[in-house]
Length: 253
Image (tube, rainbow, N blue to C red; front, side, top):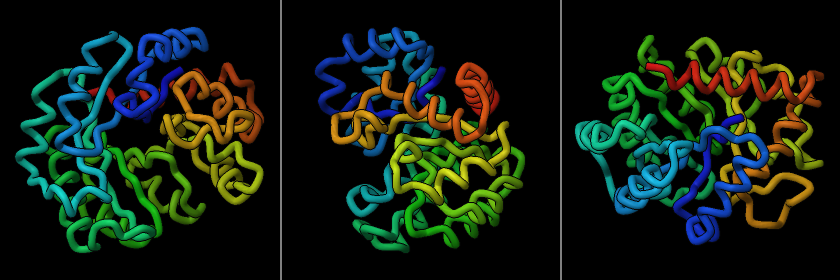
């Protein structure tokens, strides 16, 4: 089992990392992908990936942060190449819900991350909120075989998902799919092709039921895995094997 998106550099995870990793291993997790969101936080990511063989990382600037730090393609490539355990570009994308950064800056930053991921031939980890058309358009414009797409914490529409499938997109289910009111999202995850499914915690955020309201951690992924297995009408062991294989396929060079 693999947690395809967590933030081990955030509290309370970072201060309790040894215990968090022990609990992760106890539920059967074999890999954790800890996600970079700021340039200033990258050294923390590099430090964390050195602490355990199961931890891998990414480099990127979250769309909320683009107003504070606008990054060029070549700098992204250089940062990723600093460590072989940095296996993805992101978290990047578009967030027009909060508009913490203006749209044009977000779009230009996203384009630079896309070009870096293509150059490096590694997956692009995408955050998309209230920006389905714009996200699809820029990915469609840049589509090529070396562009590998991971839609993190996917909460988009079924149409958005199915339009992205031909662009070689993968879709990661978070604890949101366990929420009682997430019926539309649950229906979407029934329709995504099985070879494009991943699971994540986005910890310490978005704890799944029955731990909603608590600080999330990687070990809670077992609840998301069980819910997705129920939605797909398959055994949870099969779902775990499926999503593990999908992650390893996506992140193979």
